[in-house]
Amino acid sequence: MFVVGSFLAFHVHRVRPRLTGWSGTVVVTVVAAASVCLLTMGYWFENRGATTATAIPEVGVVLGAALLLWLALSSPAAAGLLDSRSVQWLGSRSFSLYLIHEPVIVTLAYAMGGKPPVTALVCIGVPLSLLAAEVLWRVVEQPAVRCARAAGMKVSELGRGTSRTPPLIETDLPK
Image (cartoon, rainbow, N blue to C red; front, side, top):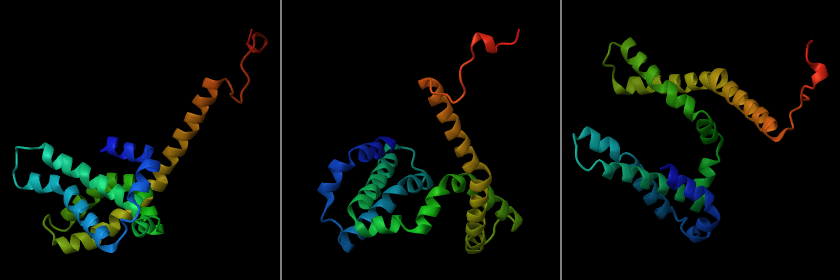
């Protein structure tokens, strides 16, 4: 998946001109539906007890992700959706949401007796997961990213010899 995404990212200037004219509503709908189907293939195979052809769902997931990238590159409507504030917010918090949603949902399910109705779990769990992701993003992820960037800048400065602190000379050493 990363290879396909990296290829598209580095060669977007070559890929985008070939995709013009494909932004019709029917094509966008078909590609989006195909992407969702392909992205969920692993789930389908896993829940059907399939033990053979494990590469099929993996290839399907990669194709689904590639189709979504293609759709974002070729369709102004899809690009506009991806540029919306809510999708941008969700994207910036996606890692925190990935980390926190399962503990929130599982805890909520246990708190609701172990087998709550799915609608109740979704109606309560999704907003709680989004709230928890926001808190995790503000308290842990965002400060960690700032710290990592600062450390990276410092290492980069040291590697180039452009550190803001002057190097020690013999006269600066304690006697």
